[in-house]
Amino acid sequence: MKKKGTPSPDTSGQPGNTQRQQHFEAENFKEKPRYIAFPHALRTLLKRGLTESDVVAAVFNGPEFGGLQAYDAHSPFEDPLLFIYGLYSDNNDADHLSPLMDCKFLAEDIEHFHPSERYISGRELIERWDKLLGMDPRSYIKSKILESKFMAFHPTRGLTEATNNSRGSHPPVETGLFALKEVLEIEKAEFGNAEITSTNHLNHDLTLQQRANEIAAQLIIHNGQKPTRNKVAEILAAELGKAPETVLRRIRKQW
Image 1 (cartoon, rainbow, N blue to C red):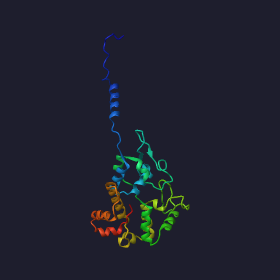
Image 2: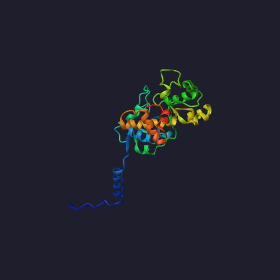
Image 3: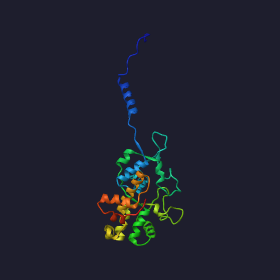
Image 4: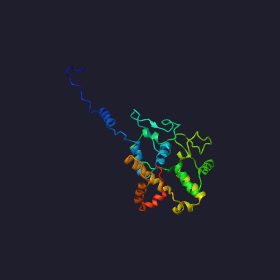
């Protein structure tokens, strides 16, 4: 029996207590994941050469298919809710960029992200093929989709009117996203490779256009207003070591 006034033995140094204390300290001092808001994530990815279409497609595909995981920025939980198109966006809304404004991303994911696929919007595709075909390419795009040569997907609506015959019930093909690899395969097989590789045959250059869109997006974030086409061409020309007039002929104002 313990005598009154006898101090309790010090057990703090015993192996079991030491392990519990170390576990407690590890849990309390464990570095928590750092999240960044969508504008920050978008700006970082644009600087690395991605486009808005690439980012939207990455979130739609998710990490299981080489994409990105977005999180609900307003989630009250320590582990925030996952953002999934269709659950956190209005399925009747053709705008697939606005839902991401309420998202955040793991800074580590953004830092190490490199897309396995690149994408372009339907608007960019129409402008490009309009030059190559010399006519409105919407019917041609629809025929290639029906032949399963490529597909147009829309993150919030699933399909575009190019895939579904019910005009008005689906968003226009301009708002859809296309895998750039499939676009280039069609061009090489059906348009003739010489026309694609030589810029002398085309004024509008898709590669320059993508970079121009990235520069414009950066300027919008930095200045809070849309830049002129001349300003974007001037910056892009300086990057490429070309005359601004040359770049100006090959880009469109798509921002």
